[in-house]
Image (cartoon, rainbow, N blue to C red; front, side, top):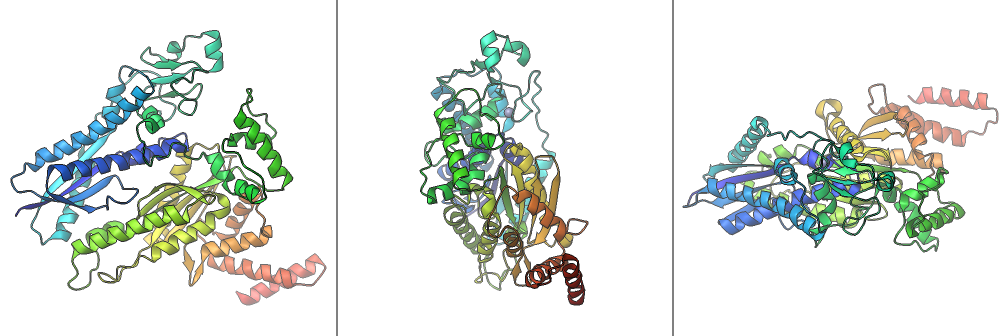
Length: 546
Ligand SMILES: [Zn+2]
C-alpha cells in the first residue's frame, strides 16, 4: 500500500494577524486562519483515506498548518492537493461574500482581487514508506520552507487611498466623518476613487460603529475581518474585549466584589478620558453614562486603575526539533510520540484557555498548545506568566523521551491607545530576545515597557535562578514597594525596578537582585534614625555580603 505525507500551510500568518487596529481584528485574523486549516483538513478527509497526524483537530485552536498521512493508492495526489487549496480559497471568499450579504452590501469593484491576492496556500506531498518517518518529516519541512522562499508573490498594484488598518491595500469601505456628512464634501476625491462603498457618519442600519468608525477606510480583507462575526456562528467571539476593557478587568472585578453592580455596556475608554480630565465625546450615550457612573464608583471606593495592559505570547523552545528529530527512547515510535505530544499540547491549550487565562486575569486570542497569544491585565501579569510556564513544564512524555518542555515568552506592556500592531511587534521582538538569551539558551522571557511618551525599557530574564522563579522575585520587590496596592504608578515603578535589575546590555543581573533584597531587608531592620548613618551601615553590610 503506498502512503504519502502531506503538509499544508496557510498564510501570511504574521501580517494577516498583526494587521489590526482593534483587538477584534487580531482575534478575527487568528480565528480565520484556524478555520481555514480545519476546513482544508476536513476536505482532505472527505476526498481520500487519511489520518491527520498534526494537530489534533479536536483542539479548540488549531494552527495554520496540518500534516496528514494519506493512503495514496490509485489517487492523483497532486489533483487532491489542488482541490484542497481551492477549497480553502473558496471558503475565504465565502466568509466575505456571506458577511457582506448579511449586511446587505454590494461588493465594490476590486474587492475579489484583494481577497484572492491576500491568501497564500502552500502544500507539499512526499511518498512515505512507513519506516523513515523522521526523515520524511524533516524533508517535508525543508521543502515547504523552500517553496515559501522561492514563491514570488503576485503583488497587487493599486492606486488610491490606503486602508487604515493594513496600509497596503486600497480602501473599499469608508465611513464619513461628521463634518464630511454635514457639509456634503466629496469624499471620493479624498479617496482618489469612486470604487468605494461609503457610509454616512450616523448610518448604522447595515454597518455598525464597531465595524467602521467615522473617518476609517478599510480594504476588503481588513473589512472582512471586522465583519467576520456575520459569517461565523458557533464559538466565534463577537465582542472581543478592547484594550481599555482589559486594563479595567481587575478594577471592575474589585468594584463588583465591593458590591457595586457593573453594567454590561460601558464605553471603557471614556473612563480613562474622565480620569485624565477630558470630556468623553459630544453625544451622551448610555455607554458613556455608565462609564461616568463607574468612574465615580472607582474613585469613591479608592480602587486604582491604570491605562496600561500587556500582550503576552510564547512559543515552545526547539519545538521543530522536538517534533521532527527528538531523542527517542529505544524502540519508541516517532509516530506514536507525535500523537501523544499533540494530545498533551491540546490538553495544555485547553487548560490555558479554561483555567489560567480567565477574566479578570486576561483574555486569550490564540492558544495552540506550543504557542500562545493573549491580553493580560497588569495586576495578574507575573502570576500568569509563572502559571503558564509552570504548567507547560508539566508536559511529560517519559514513555517516549526524557526531553523537557520549555518555552520562551515575549511581553509588551503598553498604553491602551498605542497601536496594537506596534505592541504585538514588541512582544514578538521580546520573545526573540528571550530565545537568544545567553547565546540561544532559551527558556526565558523578555519584557518591554512601551511608555506613552515613546520611551521604551526592556529586559530579558531566565525563568528561574536555581529554584527561585524570577517572576516571584520581581513580584515580591514590587509588592514591597507598593505595600500590596497597585496604582497608576505601576509603570514608573516597574521601569525603575527594571533599570536596577538589568545590566547595560539589558540582561538581568542576579547579583543586583540579591543586593536589592538584602538592602530591603536591612532597611526594614535598621533602627538608626539618621539617614546618612543608616545608608552607610547598609552599604557596608552589602559589601560584606557580595
Ligand atoms: Zn487593509
